[in-house]
Length: 165
Image (cartoon, rainbow, N blue to C red; front, side, top):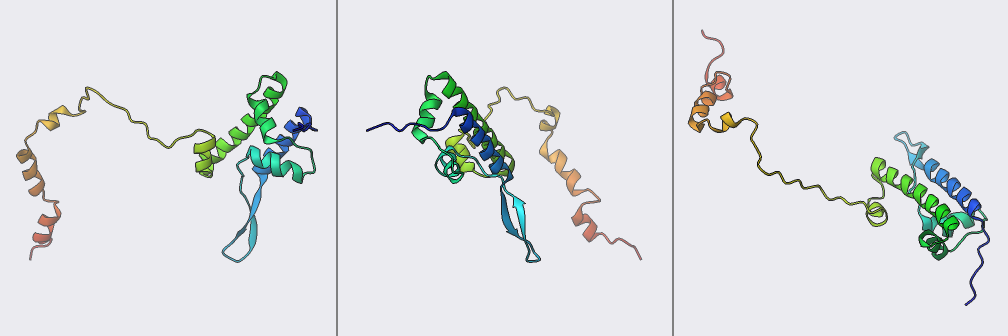
C-alpha cells in the first residue's frame, strides 16, 4: 500500500492547534433563561486530538495528517516532529486538565486519557498520641451526673416552671 504524503507543515499544524485551543476556550452554547430568552453562555470544551485531526482541521478546509502519523511523530525519534507534536499534546492536556479540575467536566476522559484517579490517599498513623490524655482517664460516672444535673438541660427546663406564682 502506498504511503500518503502529508501536505501540512509542522508550523502550520501548530498554528492550527492554537486556533483550535482558542475555539475550545471561547465556545459558547445556547442557554434558556427563566424569562424564556436564549443567551450565549461560555462552555469551554475539552480539546481532543481525534476531533482536531479528523473533524476540526477538515472543516477549516486545511490539509491534515492521519492520527497514526501524529502518534508516530509523538512517540518517534525525529526530534523536529516530536518537539512540535509534544508541544501540541502538552497544550491540549493543560487545557483539558484545567477544565476537569475547575469545571468538573470530562471526568471519564480525565481518568482514561489524562491518567487522573479518584482514589483517596490512605495515611497510616502509628503510635498515635491522644491530644487530651487526661480526659480519657476520667470515669464515665463522674461525667454523667454533671450532664443530668445541668440546670440548662432541656429536660430540667421543661419540668421546672420558669415563673413562680
